[in-house]
Length: 114
Image (cartoon, rainbow, N blue to C red):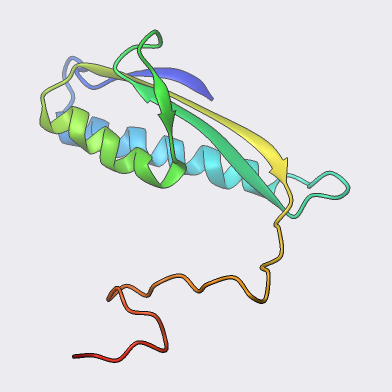
């Protein structure tokens, strides 16, 4: 999906247009994830770019797109460009000696609260 979305549409509520844009992006991602995976792939990964125009689009993570869209809408932007390309990927197994990722509270399992 490579598309420039307009947020100012004559005769339509801006909030409803914003919701429709987000719905269209989510629908595209769900459709791509349903496709059959090629041999040797575990999941569909997405390369994303986001910007106000196609020329100033920068790399963005898929999970950050909604926040970026909300930022443009909050600033009163008239349009934005989104590029989402699906690619097959393979998960890499975790190494047993690798340190654990911190929980939401910022503490690892073995940490004690002071």
